[in-house]
Length: 327
Length: 249
Image 1 (cartoon, chains in turn purple, orange):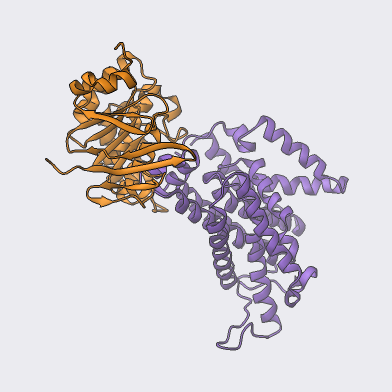
Image 2: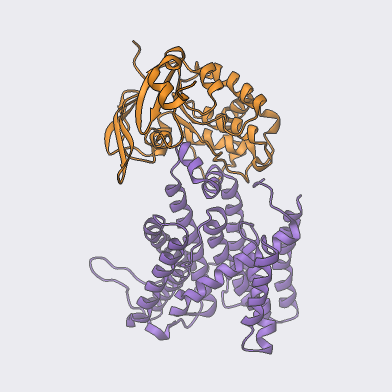
């Protein structure tokens, strides 16, 4: 095993052991905190496919995070009021079932990513950053001005949604669901990175001309990567809304996009576990420093600055060394 | 006369007042090396871009194996078997030599959109890639990250990637650039045999290589082809001597 793999295993172990310890010592708050970290990590894992593998600096991933959140909010709010979403031309009812909510969240955020990506990927560099930001903000203001689902105040759900065979209101059981999803997505992402598609996408980041001259369209590679990336971040959004039993336009704001990017950069761009480490560290800092001062982001800023200046591979990069070429 | 594999008919391209290509008609026939020479700024790169894709001519057509490929992009022409190598190596530097070659095999096989099977575990792709590396003599470096290769080895890898496409024609932009004497000599020997795999349209500054390799030479000056012929004819062409080789040559 390489040093990075050992590090990844240690992180995974911590994600299992810490909540178990919290459960044994009856500290449900710490379980919830870890759940939040795992969900934000999942959002980062999504972004890392676009940012790390594809080199696509998207400042609009809050759009997918928020769409996932609103997919949950809309379905669950209709279900709790027994009020169908649509009656004509055919009946669509709300639902409290997590698997269905996830499916809707993934589909909706995937379609949004496909549409936003199809337009944004015609640009590159700073223009790409700006246009993704613009799409994100468009959705943010749309959510604020859409009174049917709470507008600026957001939308509350009374009880957490259901998962067959589990009591989702029990923090440790909800955490098991989140961790299982995170582990599954991490596994699929590691496969994706080593697949033909991953190889081509990664090459398109380094030398688009090379990819084109062997007959592969970089645009197509990037659009698919951006869509997959949006789908994963959308799933994370649905889970995040379920964790809080609340969804609001804040999830769609550009600050959220920035935070997701911060997870990836702190942990390590293009590193499989980079966003996981980044999100864990973020939540840890928020918890520890947030108690000391409302302005804890100052310290986060300093940390980010140090990492960008002195550790380009993020935490994983500094601990595990340079990445081998995807082996 | 055999049917040309690659052909331009009356290609014209201007950038503002500058006429970079004026009514250029050249062709590439099976089994030959056709060298394109010309002084700096003659419009060689512009012509290559129009042939390989990436730049649309204002007028004229590019025919590849009888098909009008003028409206097609670089990727589509590559899929039809037009392999291009670059003056400045365009390789995925962080990836290994084998991964770069695999990329070509994936492009040629249309298998770039496989999402879960590890690329390195696909035997069909590996066979194509490893075979190409073998041909250019890079087998021993398959696992080496590309940025560690010497300049000459990167050139070889460029050719290997082109070979994985099972090309019907090569378009090579200054393959000898930056190679030392020994390197040029080796690559010249290699390209000499390669013409039987597929014909080569060769843009080159190294006159020793051009005169050693070319079956035909075309001379491009100020966006116009002023002469096309065998090495001997070109050497003795008075226009070429004046415009390019220098009057006292």
